Image 1 (cartoon, rainbow, N blue to C red):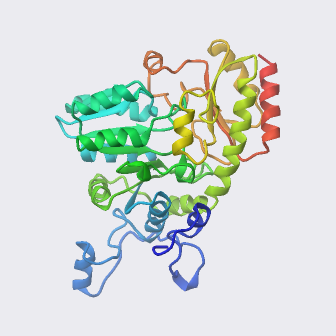
Image 2 (image 1 turned 45 degrees about the vertical axis):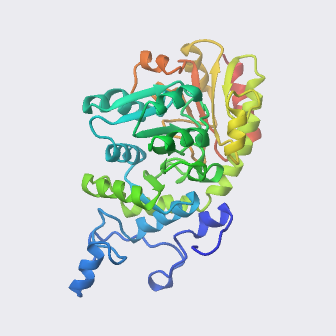
Length: 393
């Protein structure tokens, strides 16, 4: 798909899958071979050192994984991509590649719990200076970046409060000081948002979520410039957080319906957000598609759709959450998101289970908050399910 630009729906199906396969198969084969053999030693050497394309050892990559990597490369409009065993492997390997003692990071307070844990507990032990700014306070971020930094880490929309960061604006500030800009695009997906086109250097995904879309395979993906991705690839191949062929196949298969699923979830989430916003038992709704959302204008400028994720706070304490969530019928109470089935849960058991209640409070996450990942079910059925649940509290 090098020479022609297609729509996202077409790229999701064909990217990485337009080469002939074994015995003329029309789907990507699952190649579980650990190693790849060459009788020509010179060719073996050239592939080993990167002079020629090919495969040597599946800890690096293999044909099934490479097909997935090509799919996300095309969807994100990147020069290169590489895969990981999990989303957190993608995040941690990327950060550890570029952060050494004495380096400085500017990020936002509202990042995924695992990412927050790295910033709050891990990197300070490595003498990495971490500055977490109020999410959405672009002036503060620009000021901190101008003081000097090596890496800017963004997540937008954020998990779980759906705050929005102006990628283009912050990337411009980062370029002035030579900082690398990394964006977690898991919530938006490449269907709704392409951070590289807005000035980011690297974009990553927990492929476990929307990309896979069926809650049955784990993986992580990184895309960006060839130079930077290659650095992370070398760290990952030695670190060993490699993606196996079987989950790579399942994620790539899920991605073929990504545009269909996300389009449906965008539409349903908007209807559900409007319904909850008007409900007397809901104190607040966090969804960037709502005109009342503080980041709506920015989201509208950099996103093609507002996503299938929303969160809302009940008008009361955690005791209401304990009554409300188990009463829902069309939802899995589980710590994931982006699936064909609706998933929900409070941050204390999902996105920020790694943090203490005090740390969640510091990040502005109320205990009465519910993260709600809209599936592809009938939105009318989901609305009725929510209505029935709210009647019980």
